Length: 390
Image 1 (cartoon, rainbow, N blue to C red):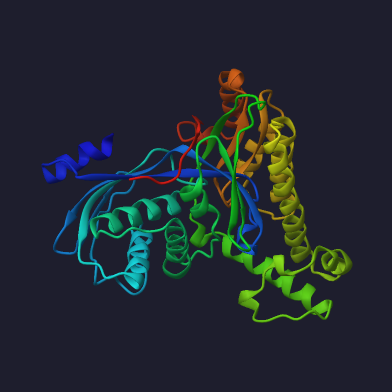
Image 2: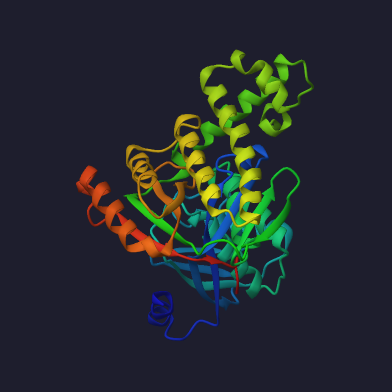
C-alpha cells in the first residue's frame, strides 16, 4: 500500500488507523436519484484508502497520492467558501461534522485512490472515508444515514454539486454479492442477495482516459431541466406545486406525464422520458436480479445506457464509442456509462471466461478510434464488495 509508505516517509512512524471506502457502480437508476427515483447499486473492491493518526492540536493535515498540493486547515477554522482545490471535498465533510458535533482533534493523513478518477464516485468515496476517519479520532460513532446525509450535503453545500444520494448510499450500505435496491423518495432499501442460480460475473471498468469534474460539467443543468419538466407538468395538470427548487419528477404521476408530455419543450420531455423509463428499469431489474436472470438484467443495463445518450444527453464521443463497442462484444451481459457520463468511464457486467477477449477487443477498437489516448485508457476487473470500513 503506497499510502502507508508515504505516511511513514513524511511522519517517520506508522499511522494508527486506516479507513477504506469503496467506489460504486449503479447499473440501473442512472441520473434519477436526485429526482427521488429508484436505484440499483453495487460497491466494488477498489476505492479510497486513508491512513491516519490523531493530531491533538486540531490541525487537519492531508497528503494525496493523486494530487500534488498538500492541504491543511484547523478543525475549528474551516473556510466558509471552497478554496478551489481537491481538498474542498474534505473541508466540506469536516464542516458538516462540526455542524452536528463538537470537534477537538484533527488528524494527519495520506490518501490514495486505487483507480483513475472519474465515473465511480471518487468524490463521495473520499468524503466518506475522511468523515469516518475524523469521527474516529474524535470518538464519534456515526450511524449509516448520518454518514450518507453528511457526505451528500458536503457536495451540495460546499463543493457546489447538486448530487443525489446514490453514490453515498451505495458506498455505505452495500454488501458483497448483494444488489442495493434503494428508493430515494423515502430512503427505504433492500439488499438483494445474488441468487444461487445466477451465473458467475465480474465487474469490468473501462476508463476513457479522460477525467472530469461535475462542478463544471452539465450535471447541475440536467437537474434543473428535470425540475423544469416536473414543474411544467404539475402546472399543465392544475396540480398543486410548491417551490421550484423542491420539485422533483417523482412528484408527478406517470399518467400526468403521458397526458401532457407533448406540451413540454423537447429537452424537458427527453429528461422526463429518461426518468420514467429508468425508474421502470430499476424496478424490473431488481426482480431479474432476485431470480438470477443476469441475461435480462444486462439487457436493461444496455437500454439504460442508450437512454442516457438519447434522452438524458450525457456522454462524450469517447464514452459513446466505448458503449457502442460494448454492445457488440461477446461476454458482456450489459454495460453503460458509470456516474454522470461526462467523461470518466464505462462499466459492464461480464462473463469471467471472456475477460481476456473483452479486454483485447474493447481496447483495440477504442484506441483505433482515439489513438491519442494510448497510455491513458485502461481496463480493470473488479468484484462486488462491502461498504465503508475502518
